[in-house]
Amino acid sequence: MGASSLPPKRSVITELPGPNSRALDARRAEAVAPGVSSVMPVYVARASGALLEDVDGNTLIDLGSGIAVVSVGHASPAVVEAVQAQVAEFSHTCFMVNPYPAYVEVCEALNALVPGDRPLRSALFNSGAEAVENAVKVARHATGRPAVVVFDHAYHGRTNLTMALTAKNMPYRDKFGPFAPEVYRVPVSYPYRDPVGMTGEEAAARSIELIERTVGADNVACVLIEPIQGEGGFVVPAPGFLPALAAWCRQRGVLFVADEIQTGFCRTGDWFACDHEGVVPDLVTTAKALAGGLPLAAVTGRADVMDRVHSGGLGGTYGGNPVACAAALAAIDTMKNEDLPAAARRIGDTVSSTLAALAADHPAVGDVRGRGAMMALELVRPGTTEPDPDAARRIAQACHQAGVVVLTCGSFGNVIRLLPPLVIDDALLAEGLAVLSDAVGAVLSETPL
Ligand SMILES: Cc1ncc(COP(=O)(O)O)c(C=O)c1O
Image 1: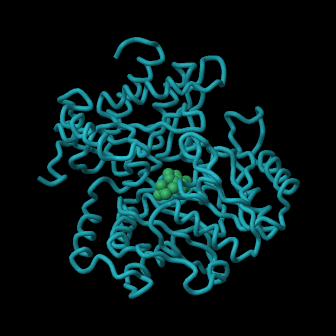
Image 2: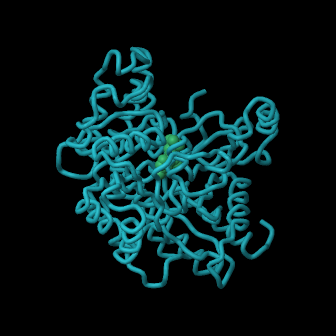
Image 3: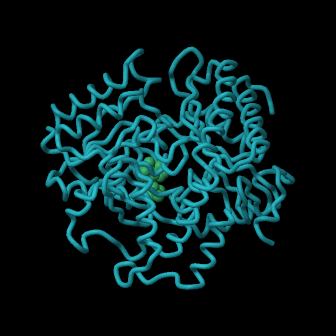
């Protein structure tokens, strides 16, 4: 039975997780390292569009997209066809041994899409963390400087360098040190938690002053930033913050690196979140939605910067695998053909009006924020800005029990985030949001669901 045979709606016929999921979870406990966790122990048998079918025959609405990956939908027909065709031709040669056209085509597509009208080059990798590591390698090599500046609430991955770049201790860093050196952290613009009225320019000046005073611009290879923070809580900086930082970088010979791994490829209503304020980064990291569910990541950057690295200095056995490249080309075509930036903006309008209504009804919803199809609500103790992670956890759990996948995030664990596939239809989105609204109402007013 193929994924296309999924019923076109949510259908919960057992408790969640159901008996087959529970049996698999018992096997998992014996076989899988517990350090790898899952948001929701409901095992998936197949998926299509914005729906997941589990091993008990329940059909769930997916408002998480496997953490912003399947923007073109689960089992997107174009991606499935491209992958099947490519895997039947060949699945691996290693681009560093014998190259193949799809790698070059993905780099051409990235160079055409990434912000900025100047010659660009790309290199392909397997995961987001690997792309970030390589962006730092390139920045250090090109500038001859060691320091990397990152921000409060940042998330960049789980390898040794990217743990060092990531802000939150639990679960990402705790007892995994020592960490890579020459990483310096400064405040980000977080309008909900910054002094009231602080502008983006003022927040940038605060960060820049700290960099100048504690690191020294001449020591800085790059400033690395998520234009909208992902795991850190969907923190959207105040307008003017990113342009002011990018301008300072330009003046001081520091490379501005945008980590668009979660925000990129239509998620925020533009192809890239940097497009919103016309910010042109020197280097951009992408992954997640790039290949419609296959593992692929990239660094795309100014040709004069990328060209500094000697031959053989970048790469890896699987980086730019041909099957992943075929998937990326199909995913990018789908994003263009179906105008997924516009779809993300439409989803954003619907989601933000639902979340605004929840904020109006519940003082515990402290903030509603995000852009396009990357929206979140931050939960606090009513009348304060004190984070309430327990409320977020219980709301997410209530959604899960009702068959709707939502994710939490945030440095304080008190943010519910929504990242639906951009191909979700209006009825499914409305149903998913109705379940979320009921869960918020039930948890915040303490009435049983
Ligand atoms: C902004 C950002 N950077 C880097 C990463 C790491 O990507 P990966 O999990 O593919 O290594 C993530 C993953 O969530 C991310 O959101």
